[in-house]
Image (cartoon, rainbow, N blue to C red; front, side, top):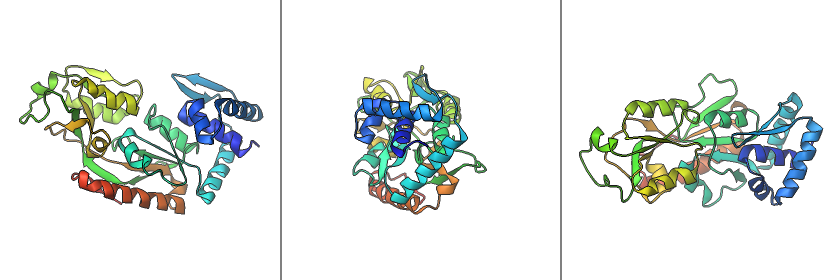
Length: 290
């Protein structure tokens, strides 16, 4: 068996994709993380590979999954160092004040499938997604979904965009400008739904879904993006265009089925509810579902 500290270093690297970030979560330097991971890999008899900026294990052995399960139970029992990842849309809701007992991720990810893999293998404990189209199916044997909110999707633009505060917009108006679109590798169903709408002079595909790339690309005062009232609260420089996308999205908590009624998860849902309630005066079109 590996120690809790060693396995945490490995799983933080797999989750965050960066040794420096993993060290910051463990209050140590990157060299210490590397030593712990090397020892962990040697004991487990596996190799760490990197592809497209992500770390992968050469194989996932049954006893590794069992040990992760044990360590997850220890985290839940202690109510400490639980691991929460989320989309950038709600990062502003989670950071201040910090959620007691939870390690927050970097609010970016490669794909929903990657997030679901990390959940299935108990590398992370919960994920908050703002996409309702790519959720796990109801009959998924491992993963469950707790719907938190829903809201109508918006077309967002920089506050100085030429179409800001214009009424009576048409497809032709929107077609004049590039659109920051989701690649199918990140949100396959939602990407198809947005493509079907068909506006935009060009589509700039994000190679990675992250707060920096997403929120700053509209700062060119030209590119359009998608979001809602919740995400707009975290990006004061973005405003809603007067255009009805006809799509509804919202936040959902995705986690393993065997954790759904655990006291720490119940407490997390209550804390999230309190924070969404505080946001409600600024998000009139948001419906709270918990």
